[in-house]
Amino acid sequence: MAQNQAQQAYSPGTHPDLPPPVRTTGVLGWVRKNLISSPLNIALTLASIWLLWSIVPPALNWVLAEAVWSADTRKECWALMGAPRDGACWAFIRGSFKLFVYGWYPEPERWRVNVTFLLFAITIFGALRENIPGKKYWLMFATAFPFIAAWLLLGGFGLTPVGTQKLGGILLTLVVAVTGIAFSLPIGLALALGRRSKLPALRAVCVIFIEFIRGVPLITLLFVASTMLTYFLPPGSTFDLLMRVLIMVTLFASAYIAEVVRGGLQGLPSGQYEAADSLGLTYWKAHRLIILPQALKISIPGIVNTFIGSFKDSVLVLIIGMMDILGLGRARLNDPEWLGLAPELYIFISLFFFISCFGMARYSLSLEKKLQTGHKH
Amino acid sequence: MNQDTPTSSTTEAPATSSGEKIITINGMHKWFDDFHVLKNINLEVGRGERIVICGPSGSGKSTLIRCINRLEEHQQGTISVDGTELTHDLKNIEIIRSEVGIVFQQFNLFPHLTVLENVALAPIWVRKMPRAEAEGNAMKYLERVKIPEQAAKYPGQLSGGQQQRVAIARSLCMNPRIMLFDEPTSALDPEMIKEVLDVMIELAESGMTMLVVTHEMGFATAVAHRVIFMDGGEIIEEKPPREFFENPEHERTKLFLSQILHH
Image (tube, each protein chain N blue to C red):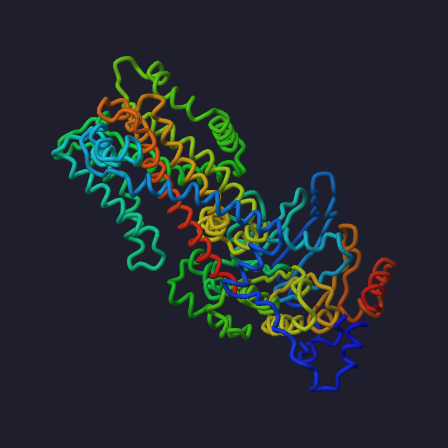
């Protein structure tokens, strides 16, 4: 009603100018809309600013401004600050860096570890790039990589042998995690197909295996690897502890991969199986060309989730006394020279795991997007 | 229904083919668990013969044609296709499947492959044809179903009618002796039905043996040699189309025809 009256009061073109509407776009508009639109919002905004102000500057101060980067002992670190513990003592991480990366790998042979790391980077780059010339050869190289890496790291065939007990730190973490990830995918795939097989015996074996492995905590399996297996092996035979651990970690991850892939297989409409069958494709060809490419695509988030899980679970090996990056770091904390520097250590280790896992997550996201655009507009 | 759909074509009067039988089904029964889907089916199909199968939903017509290439397994009686009997022998099943093409209601194209890859896949992997030859051949069939320009697209980018024509080309590429159609136009929007039926009519004119489950009675009249009516898992009536529509014998047939023709 009021509007109507206002319209009637003026003839067209004679209405006086109204004030412009309040801006709702741009930085100011956003601030106005989201931060100070009501008394409650203003109060929350002020509280947040106070909270950030009391946390962020001191934290930055501790991590960067007051931090000491080179010193030989904890005491030297303290001496270089205003007061002990005013800043981080990154000198601890720097001084221990080689130990953290190589473990006890013999000094003159460390180039072999470096070559392995380099080949690993090349493998990742080659295998994950979609449009790379000679993709087939890259994949063949990626398949061969674990064996080349084993030869480089452990020696033999012309290289000085290095015992597996010399592996430690980031090197050991990567060996456990990458082995688990690399071998769990093919084994998990086979288990998933076996679980859907028409042959009752094969299906039963796969179901029992998957359910048994999933039903037992990884730590228990690792204890089995470190102690019980020796009872089952013939006396006098030595079966390397690392090898046993790698087998357990791989089997554990493959049970999970199997279930993720099975979900993907069940997500396919039955028409895809029927179309493949009706064209005369055999079971293996139908799976290789039609079923698995689609099922694996659906399963990417679950597969990468499992990969990230196994990557982080690799730290559990410290419970059976293996010195991965966490185990080695904690041992280093007991060194009298560096006593009490736990925050620095855990920040460093967290950063290492976060960067690795976040990288995997981002890659899976970009892969999903790429495969998606192929099928839709 | 689209009774006037196949305007363009008039095939020669449904003169049944020579005596040679390409499909022989004898006393065939099928159960889904306790449910008796197909009861004592006896059917002979001559080489070059075109049969339309109709009936109410749940009458077993789809199941019947799916038994012919063993997408469904029958429990009693015999089915032989071009002299090969369908048994548990996997070799026989593969031979029959590569000679019998099927077109599904839901198209069932492979969404992760382009149209050309969809069509060329089976010749390359089943017939071991060199890729270049298979793709050239595939293009020929895509031209036959009139969509060569879509070869590089993915199925998800095509309309339903286009997808169904690709599915027909994919089956034809294997040079099948028999083509089965399982309600090929039921999932299509009305304006796309004609483009698919036109392709099927062209195929009929080329002399292909065809078994078509459909309710497109115009198509049946124009193309079929015989119309089979099924209900409750049994073949109730089979006649040449004109006779079938003008002179249905059984009550159930009359009821069905009155339901689909007048609404």
